[in-house]
Amino acid sequence: MPDLKSSAAKTLAQVSLFAGLSEAELAFLAQRAVARKFSAGEIVFSEDDPCTGMYVVESGHVRIFKTSPGGREQVLSIEGPGGSVAELPVFDGGNYPASVSAVENSTLLFIGKQDFHALCLAHPEVALKVLRVIGSRLRKLVGIIEELSFTTVRHRLAAFLVRLARREGTRVEGGVAITLPASNQELAAQIGTVRELVSRNLSRFQSEKLIQMDGRRVVVADVKALEGELGESP
Image 1 (cartoon, rainbow, N blue to C red):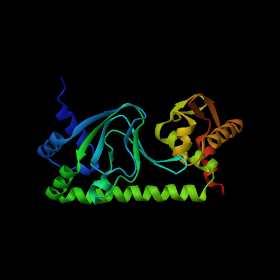
Image 2: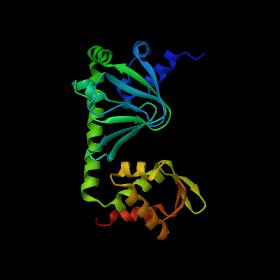
Image 3: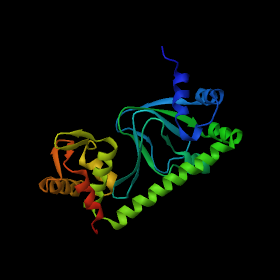
Image 4: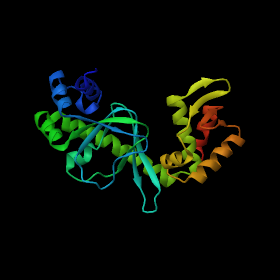
């Protein structure tokens, strides 16, 4: 049977916040981390819930998102193994500022608020790393605000496809193959629009021969041509 605490320590060692901690310190933290399993689509916590601790993704992926009063979602980030969630409210004592749900069946390590505070007191460098992580996320949020304020849905969709092709694309005959999120509703949440506009713009890209679609699999015929869309004025 696998050593669960050893597995937790290995996961924690991948987290930028805990880089530099000794094996003994990581083991100490791992002893206090609680593994929690979530099914695809299950809510980990909701916006404005009281913060009880932070989470580290051990396996699977989670989405961090905000929901409008009308029910529309805006995805702020997708975190995978080694990613951390909810450092800010653990650090500042506020409620969770956004909701988190599992994208797929996932295992998260929960670290209680008191244990995290004790870690920061024993290792002040961890607190400085929290500030760096929060700063990085703030820059990303500013980028999201700029995209939503100053670009069209077509531009945002093209940018999303280009990023996906650059990061995860596979070279195939006819271009670069990528896999879209599970539904156009989810894709819409990631680029800040509605499902109907995603479907319409994907169809336009296909009619313009920028992409070829087969279900959720898309072949980008020419990444540079699609990238050219990003230079156009909104």
